[in-house]
Amino acid sequence: MNFSTAVSRMLMVGMLAAISGPVAAQQPYPSKPIRVIVPFASGSTLDVLARLVGQKLTESWGQPVIVDNRPGSNGIIGTEVLAKSVPDGYAFIVVSSGHVINANLYPKLPYDTVKDFAAVATIASGELILVINSSLPANSLREFIALAKSKPGGLNYATSGSGSGGHLAAELFNIMASVKTQHIPYKGTALATTDLIAGQVQAFFSPPLVAMPFIKSGRIRAVAVSGDTRLPALPQVPTFTEAGLPGFDVKIWFGTLAPAGIPKAVIEKFSSEVARILSMPDIKASLGSQGMDPFTTFPEQFAALMNSDMDKCAKIIKTANIKLDN
Image (tube, rainbow, N blue to C red; front, side, top):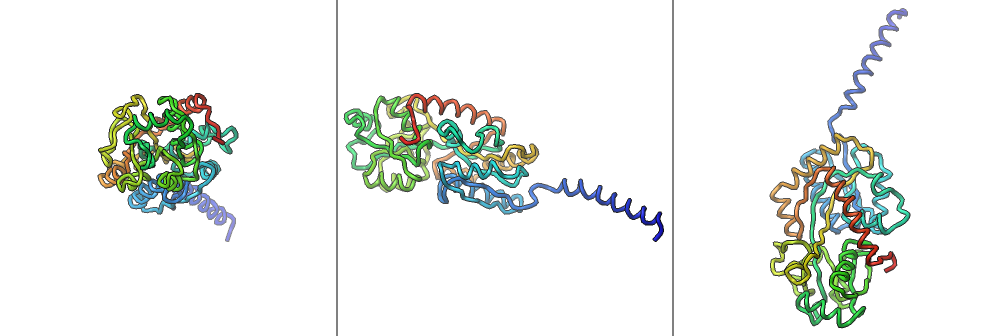
């Protein structure tokens, strides 16, 4: 092989490499399995939502969506895993309002709540139900407030953990109703519900998904639901405004984040597909049966919501003097 032939072949190899590079880079997204981190245990509301939407993404994109449960430390462990993930569009997390609550409660998080993440898509929103032990001499919100006022510090409320959405809701309730109930934190909603039924605690601001079976069976009593409308799945339960505490409007949102630096095109595609999924009748029906509503926003709106809620949570935490050991 002479010199000119060798040069020609080298040039050809270079041209092929130059051509194949952009082709590989432009490979349609997604081209491999997607991991969705759930920072709480299997069976939690976040887990249910991740699997519900993940299955639809798998069907539409033809790539497996793998749910990776990383529970612990009120969601911080799983969130740190995402913060340290490669921002290539193949790692996401499903979070709730607790993501911004943690920012106000934990002074030394292993990540920056704002800078280390990109808002992608909201999924659902839901109210909380104030449920009480069925043996309490209270059949309405007014009667429960009267009972709490007659026993300052004598009634306990359960939460799924310090800094959870239910924790802030209960402290806001204490402020607005001018009562004092004591916080008993649990490691998850299942244990909190079990002790509520047994009478170890007297009240719980519970997600509808957790409380509804026990409300319907009469094992716990629902006195009011946060939000401005009644839940279709529990039409007999009044809102706080209807029950006598106007202005108590608490909603928990659920959404998806990615590591900071993820390509904007991936965010747009993921967000648009989630919005399409949330418009499906079977998804609406499934969420409704669990006391939740589809909640669709653009990524920019989701980011603004998180910033706004971070400020609101900070005010409640300061006013109620909430500490992690409460």
